[in-house]
Amino acid sequence: MRLLLLAPPGAGKGTQGERLAGRLGVQHISAGELLRAQARADTGVGREIAAYQQRGDLVPDAIVFEVLTPVVVVAVARGGYILDGFPRTLPQATAAAELGVRLGLTLDAVVSLHAPQAVLVQRLLDRAIQGGRSDDTAAVIRHRLEVFTTTTSPLIAYYRDRGILVAVDADQAPEVVTTEILTRLSDRSLTPDRR
Ligand code: AMP
Figure 1 (spheres, rainbow, N blue to C red):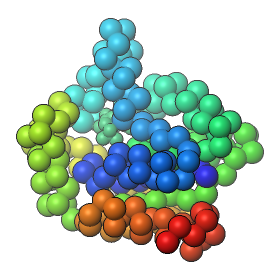
Figure 2 (cartoon, rainbow, N blue to C red; figure 1 turned 90 degrees about the vertical axis):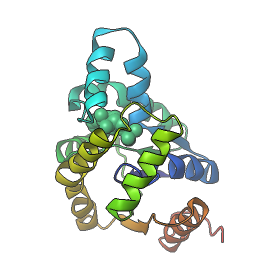
Figure 3 (cartoon, helix red, strand yellow; figure 1 turned 90 degrees about the horizontal axis):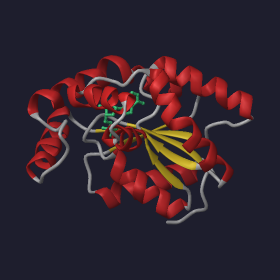
């Protein structure tokens, strides 16, 4: 199973990524988490990544590929992945598709999670109160949502045009969202029926 999770901040990519990986028995890879791990390292590139993340800006594609590619290659060898937070730009999507062609890999599905903007903002502010991430401040949250709308959301049409988009309402309890995703994947004969 090779699955992407495409969703604005606060839609539950991380939560669903973990839940789906557990249910489907493949590795969960979070692009944001991998980049945060690099950012914690006291290196030049780590400091560069930290600065982008702190502002809520996207990390440059070259750095993202350098960090992500080896992890994805290992996951593929082990049977697949649920990749959350990548791709986030059209150039990332086309580069990933080219790499897939070269490696003889295709994506099974792209799950797009959606929820009203007010719900996303509230969830992120709640996470901030619970001692969340340093990019969970009101101003940076607003910016990250703008970046999603302008730069990442065109990927929804990109994958819909390729016939692999599964759109799910994320404004529901996490277990309901997981069940809906698994049902929709099994409707496409992508998973054993686990209902
Ligand atoms: P996330 O954990 O998915 O909310 O991502 C947190 C931050 O990591 C984003 O605001 C970006 O700064 C960076 N990031 C994550 N994934 C990507 C990506 N595919 N391309 C560029 N930057 C990314």
